[in-house]
Structure formats: C-alpha cells, structure tokens
Length: 209
Ligand SMILES: N[C@@H](CCC(=O)N[C@@H](CS)C(=O)NCC(=O)O)C(=O)O
Image (tube, rainbow, N blue to C red; front, side, top):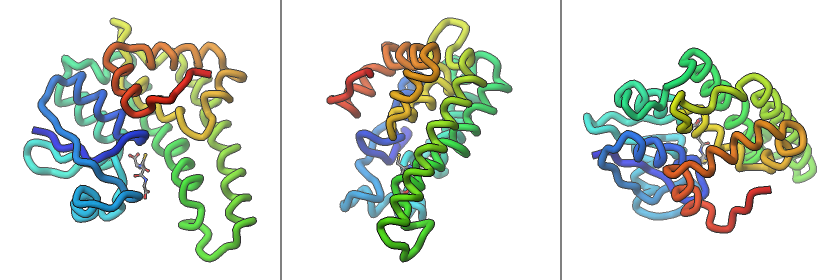
C-alpha cells in the first residue's frame, strides 16, 4: 500500500495520476503546510519541509520531490509507461520543471521565505518578477519539450503529467498566446481518461482558457 500525503488543487494530483497508471493500491492522507490537522502533523514528522506530494512506499521509505517520485514509479512499474518515449529527454524535462518552474512557484507562493522581514512592496516586486520568469521558463519548456509529453501509444508520460503544474499562476494563458501548439498538447493531457477525473476532483471550477 502506498500512502500519499496531499490535498486538492496541489501537486499531489500528479502522483495520484501516476499511482493509478501503476494500478497499485494507495490512499491519500489529507495534509499540507497550509492546513491544520492530524495528516499535516504526520506530514511534518516525515518531511520537515512539509511539502506535498510526499509518498510512503511499501517498504516504508519516504519519497519527496515530484520528479523523483515519478521516476521511481516509472522504473518500478515499466508497464505503466511513465518513462516511455525519449527517456533521456523525459528525465531532463522532469528536472527542468522541478528546478525552473516548481521552484519559481514556491517563491511566488511564499516570497517572505526569501525576503525575511521585507515590506509588502518588496514582496510584490519579487512575486511579479518571479511570475514573469516562470512564464518565460514555460515558454522555453514548450520550445524544448513540445514533442516529449506522450508515450508512443499516446498516453501522457511522466513529463506530460508533470507539465500539469502549468495550471498555476496563469501559465496556461501565457502558453495559449505564445505557444499555442504546446497549449493544445496540454489540453490533450487534461483530456486523458486517467488524468481528467483527477483534475476534475482537484479543480472542479477549472475552465480551459
Ligand atoms: N520540490 C518539491 C516542491 C513541492 C511543493 O512546493 N509543493 C507545494 C504544494 S503544490 C507545497 O507543499 N508547498 C507548501 C510549502 O512549501 O510550505 C517538488 O518538486 O515536489
């Protein structure tokens, strides 16, 4: 049994999709750094950063870092085809998103972590600059990885699933304008029969732009 610490409208959606693709038993513990409760207390004990997704695998090890979790599941369950396609580029793309996009989202969400006691104007400046950088990072991603999101049998691979984090901070709108072909590929990921119900649960109000 896998135990996934997470909550709706968060990056835990990626791992929910991947676990379903692997057809393994799993359950979700409601947890995040912004919610109080038993699950969040338990999360803090196993992941001092209190970030989600955090996954406990059947041998009891704790796995954090979305890209590492997706790679681990892809290697453990090859039939799920999470790493199917050009594996070298899939690995590069997963790390690209973690380093350039997900990290930027962390700054936008928590500017005070980087600025300490800065005033609101300074925080707003950091957030708007980081958002600009994030959008540029997604446009570069679109250019570099457009053809890498699907398996040869047209299911989203781990890179397609992780590209889902482009749902945050208006990146989809930017991609729709600057990289429309890639935005369409993301819509294909959204429409996948495993992905769509998970996204609908996480973002019931979501409307494609
Ligand atoms: N490096 C981590 C980042 C995970 C992350 O930032 N998750 C967000 C939710 S989508 C989170 O838990 N943020 C809460 C916090 O940092 O306090 C990964 O790639 O999985």
